[in-house]
Structures are given as structure tokens and as C-alpha cells.
Image (cartoon, rainbow, N blue to C red; front, side):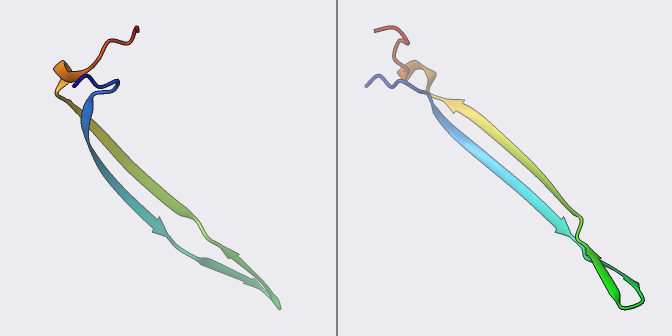
Length: 56
């Protein structure tokens, strides 16, 4: 069977870190919430022989 796209295996890894920083000035309060996200996505193609032609 010919396929329009190759089979693939995808591996995903993600990490997220967040913190809250509170600043006070008298009766006023300010909260800063910085965050950092890192992601890695890796795809591996398999069975390229089963791919069909891109042209009809």
C-alpha cells in the first residue's frame, strides 16, 4: 500500500518552571510570575519505501 506521508515515530519532552515574586510598598502589592518552558521534539522517519509519489 502506497502512503502519501512516511511513517514516523515522534518523541516529545517538555519542562516548565514558574515562580511568584511578591513586592510590597506600603499597602500596595505587586506579584510577578516569571516562567520558562523548554521543549524538544524529535521525529524519526520509518518505512520510506512505502511512500507514494508526490505527483499523481
